[in-house]
Image (cartoon, chains in turn red, green):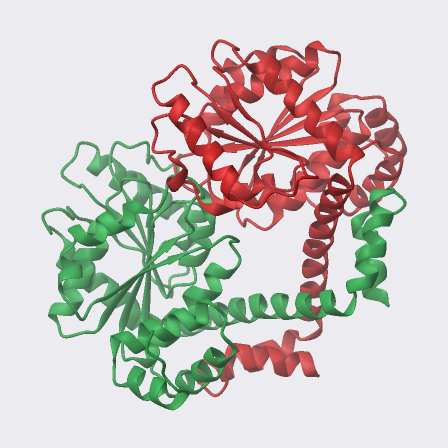
Length: 314
Length: 314
């Protein structure tokens, strides 16, 4: 692999060099120490991008929809990236995403950046890796970054909810009655999309979502959650959807509520970093004690909780 | 709900009262402070159970297989519990497990304890809740506790790998070639089960797994991983499987390697508890600073990482 020194890496990324972008994302994923220095310099000079999370039920057509939206923004001259969040199940390989990329139109536009963010082993690092990738893309001048969930697990949803704008994609007649959707999802939705809207049940689903939204407490000063209909395979509704997405971004950047939301995202990130750093220090400091106490736990003399509290009081 | 004071809760659990068991599991899940005191007393008096994790590809027949194994051990007079680990996707509701329980034979035996461990919102708590539930079941005298993954996400697998014995269930002809199975799964398997072994491809899959196992470094003193064939729907092979599971338990409790493994599980648990406690203290201590620094991050004056490091140095 081509090697870059920090200076040339920074320059190339800021010039929008895709290969340099990929390189720094990989360095960050692999936690190469110098990646952090480069990230720090880039972060302070970059303009925040609009990060759009897209989640929804399996088979809802999320990737086709993201493809359409990417093309919409790209057609308006914007720099667009797609990060596919894939806490890949240890089973069943990873061929799905590969196929998807080959099929979609956005992959043919060379300057739309597409990358799969997959776990390699433990789950914890995926969120951090995704945030790092967003920072690199911002530094390279990307203005709209899509976070698309490949699966529909809680882990992906936890990552997507850190986006500026969250799209929840549902389809008629797939058990996506409002009763079936758990509360957590309703809370993260800034826009509802009813995809495959030519199917039976689209109006019913629309009515259900509207009813449910009317039952929740809505601050009159806050964003009014729209419900849009699309047929991603034909492109119907995607222009309107992209406009609605842009409106939400506008609202975010000009309202107090939008500001507070961005702050919450940063706080969430700081919390994750703090947890990791604190644990690292704790484990280094108490390496020997941990061996002793774990044996005491196995002997049932002390619970793991009590053991930890004792170590923390040292 | 019936209320118990701590003393009567402890007595009833130790007498094996199922309602009291459920009650304490719920109290622990909801992080009621007194649950910890009760857990602490129970932990020190309980005998460790044999915890058996079962994971595998979707449609591999995991729940039917667990059902068979539960009946096998129950027939020998053992006290058996099943915890279904379900980091329920926010989509598609939770009806699957309900159906499963109604269909399975073990549910008809009143003294087999079955419970679904589901996330309510964030993922982090599921692992802790599962460990707490195991402790309660141990105190109530359960000797074999199955952890069965409902989904096949990394999150579930991370929980199942904390079991004493891990079964990986594969089926012929479902893309479960050895190439498709990721390394992480091979590392956690103590036993491989080829379920639906009457299907075409069972022998090929068997040969593949054996080949792959022969390629990994195996300590001659360590457990030799068996590959068993079952047909869970008819019960074929389940007696042999239960014997193999019991043998692994025997190995665990009598070998040094088994002891080290139990210690690793305890250490992992202590790490999780420490991370949580440390973060809690950090957030309380730095509540105001976090507000200030998050604004500095939004202004791009400092990265979230740098902000956290500054706070930690205070």
